[in-house]
Image (cartoon, rainbow, N blue to C red; front, side, top):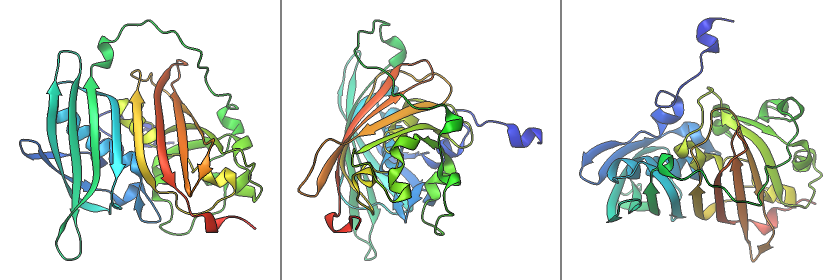
Length: 287
């Protein structure tokens, strides 16, 4: 294998960094180009979108790292040009708060708001080391005993561009849906990384919480599960190496479910937590 083939991408110079890049056009106004490489059946992934807005806020706020970020997904984003507008709500010594919205244009040329975000930023490197927790890392088999998209049938063309950019190795105990026998437990667990070997950072954690197959699959449902609202708490700057992601759903009611995610790094630290509300199609079940 050639040296070029074995080179790992680095933070700041990777496909993820290029595809989440924003260009400041005016104070608080950024241009970006949403990549089709982070889509599933032409739907742009919500975690990728959150990382794009997170990068714009990191540029506009006096603190570098997202501590908490909440997004409401208003309309479906499309690959292509977009504009992000940010505002500083409050700038303090340890935390700054900002808001951001992403806009695109419809076929008639009208501006359409896609996502609206409220976030607080700080400096993860300035946090104290004291940790008191009852949380434990998810029990996932070794990576060589888990399965990725490459282990299943070839996908339909254009159906899963995002999986080519991810390293996913799913816990076999959460893969019943892929065999037509969902467990009904509403759980997904996986090793996670970027396919080019780029190590995780706070912005890629915003992607990680929303990158696994929907827990709805293990409940016995099929089809797209669009995010209505997603809140992420970043707790620590992740260590280099693969992440472990655990996602659970406890309650599906009225066509909506929650997904609670935990992200653990290679040093066994809980580096991110999230909760999202998602909509499901109840007429798409098995049987």
